[in-house]
Image (cartoon, rainbow, N blue to C red):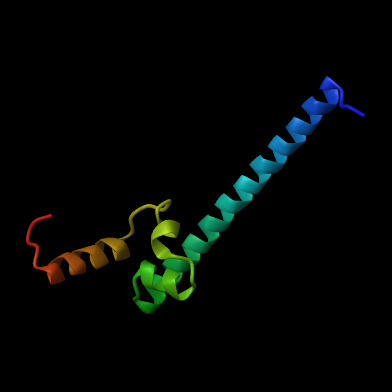
Length: 88
């Protein structure tokens, strides 16, 4: 029982549609989680990385897709000052 070329084409399209839908759902979840992390970070004055670690999400990997926020910029400046680096 081999599939016809039309059946193969339909199956490929179904798989492609499923993959596209799944990838969009993952992107939406990243956005929702990122917004929640930003909200918690602002509300409780913790860095976004700290919040992500507490949520066991690995802050660096998750935050790469989001724009720089004032909280991240401030945390970066504090870290650079603690290292004693005057120039960045």
